[in-house]
Length: 300
Length: 202
Image (cartoon, rainbow over all chains, first blue to last red; front, top):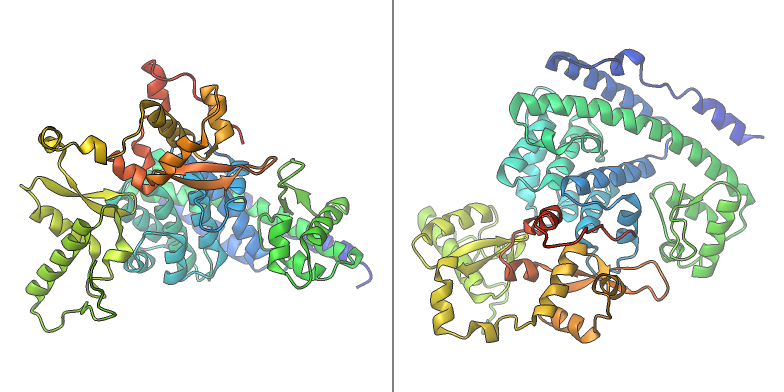
């Protein structure tokens, strides 16, 4: 363990990319689209077992990308920065606003292991029976089941794209035997895809899975490298509770220093949390995400 | 409600035959909606009917029951309320001074409310930029008092001012199901009703 950093970087260089044939060209038939989507999902499943990958952080950051897509589907223009602000600057009991609510739904959906009650908490206003029904959707492949869920939800309530997509990614993850929701389908499905039904929608979903894996994989690589940098910084930190703070940064997209201090009130004051964040930025292990001088948010 | 039976409400009505049970659940839902001035959430409605009963199906049946009546079940946000049908607006207006008991907001109040709806979350400073003048705390207070707006995320700058967002009561007051029923800003601009409206850069 002389040089943990060099070792992890070496391991990471072995994180296998998506084989070229899976993503090359354009799938013309539903068979070829389904075949490629399946191969991509199998590959992603292998990568997700990689120990160096901070899974919770990966899910949380993909949730931000998915929320951005859903906000656009809802005809709004807020970007990632505005969504982060809405989530992190809303006090308990206040309303994060229309775009912030979409992001809060996503963020809650990926924060806890998938279950009817956890999803119910994320999707305020959707009854548990409905969620349970969606999670039990049937179809020949996991992606077909997800398409089925989108079709069912949107036929009943055409404007509930966020609910439809969260439940679709949930049923996909569940069919693949994962314990948590991983946003994949939701990253690239467009409004015109969601107006499709039946065969057309299934085709769009297979393509979206392939495109989603194409986005999630490079992000996994980036986050694994960033996590290695963050862990390598640990020996240089003196703050009490630094290890716990690093764990938090490895499971959340962003944290305000105040929120970090609130998570560990015994070991970190607001001031100490702020110093710790600045120190990590100095060490090149953390980024300040807003570019502001105040109300800063930090993340890897 | 005058009397509250602590846990005494028989939700499942196991001793009734299925069709009477369903009718009773329908009546309960209608009663709850009738008694409430604001939309009632699904979770609240599901507390007065049996464990497995679908609130959505009950609401559908209630809507059918109310056909031919001057009022209807309307979905507002994530809840429902009873509402008089629009066709009876002239009659209601002729008989009762509803204006006085309704919103009683000035035209300018309504303009500010509409701006909040389109630009939410937005702070008083943001409103000032749009209207070119200070929007008073009183005006914001009037909107908040009527439950039309609530506090949103704080703005990331000095003093961390609160932003304002519209509420479900706002949707109910203006007969909208969701904010997406607001007219499209681009359409408004095309019709010459609004200037080029860029989303406030946060």
